Length: 427
Ligand code: IMP
Ligand code: MG
Image (cartoon, rainbow, N blue to C red; front, side):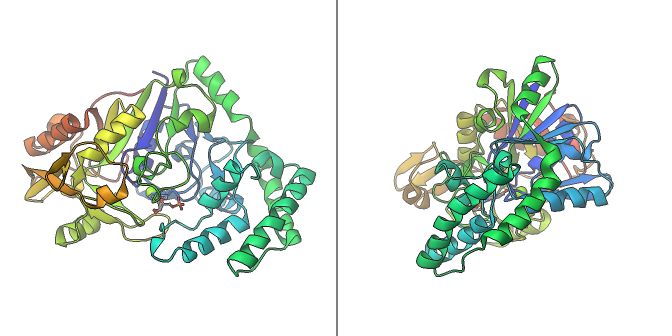
C-alpha cells in the first residue's frame, strides 16, 4: 500500500507530528497539503525535542523527500527560520521541495488577521494570528500571490502593488490601522525569494512519479476534522480543509491514488481557541488532563481545553474522511484515573443525537451521554504490543474502535518514537 493519508480526527493537536514521524520511517516522501504555520508539531527523537510548524515532520530523516504542497499557505520568514533552526540542530534540509503553486502569506495578511479578530469582540474565533484566514481569503478571492509569482520579480511587484492598494484602504479606512509600504515589503520578500528559490518544484509531478514507481508516500494533515472549513464547527474553524479529501487538492493527485486514511485521535479530547466543546471538563479532571498531557499549544502556548473522549466526533471523522483506521495517542496520560468516560451521543431535551450536528446552537444545547469504564493503574509506557496493555486499557481502546466504526492501527504510550504500538501495519 504505497499511499497513506494521516489526518486529525478531533480539533487538532492529536499528536499527528509523532505519528507522522513514526510512519515516516517507512515512507519515501512526506507531504504537507493544507494549513500553514498555525500548525505546531512536536516530535521527540531519542532525547531531542523538535518543534515544527511548516516543514513536514519527515525532515528529521536524512533520506526522505519532504514536500510542502500547493494547498499550504507559506509565511516565508517562518519557513526560513525553521530551515535555520533545523540546520542549527544538524538536520539536513536539502530534500525539501515547495510547490510553485502554494500561496504566500504577506505582512498584510497577518495584520488583517489581528484587526479582524479584534473587531469581532465576543465573537472572536481565537485564531493563531498567523495570517492564515486572510491568505486563504485572497486565494479564494483570486488575488493571492503564489510562490511562483514571488520568484518572478516583475510579476511579484505588479501583484504587490495591486494588493496593497486594496489592503491599505481596508486597513486604514475600515479598521483604523496602519498601512504598509510597497518598497519595504518588496525588499523583504524578494530577499526571501532568493533564499527559497532552490526548493521550488512542480511537486505534484514528484508525488505522481513516486507513486508510479511503487514508492511510499505519506500525506501529513494539519489541524483536525472539527476545524475543517466545511465540516467543522463553523465559524470556529480554520480556513483550510483538514479532512482527508484535501490531500488530493492540496497535493495534486486523484482520490484513486490514496490507499489508506488514518485518523489520529487523542485518548481524550482537547481544543484550543473558542467554540463549543460538549465533553469539556471545566473542573479538576480537566486540569489533571492538561497537566499530565502537557496540553499547551505548540504554536501559541495557550492552555488547551480538555475533556473526555467523544465518540460522536470520531464517528463523524470516520465518515467524512473515510478513515480506515485510528491512531490513538497519549493513552498513557489516562493511567491512574479511577474511571474513564466515553461520550456515545448527545442529549438535547428529550432527544438523543448520534450524529454531529451542523448548528452550533444545537451543539451548545447538547449534554454528553457517557458510558463509564474502569481505568488502569499499571505503567503502560513500556508496552510495545497490544497484549502488553492491561485488560482495562485494551477494553477502552476496543470500545473506542467499536463506537467510532474504525479499527485501531497505532497506539501511542509516550512521547518517544519508540513508545508506539503498531496493531496494523500501514506501509
Ligand atoms: P487559524 O487557523 O489561525 O485561522 O485559527 C482558527 C482556529 O483554528 C482557532 O480556533 C485556532 O486555535 C485553531 N487552530 C489552528 N491551527 C491549529 C492547530 O494546529 N491545532 C489546534 N488548533 C488550531
Ligand atoms: Mg499542534
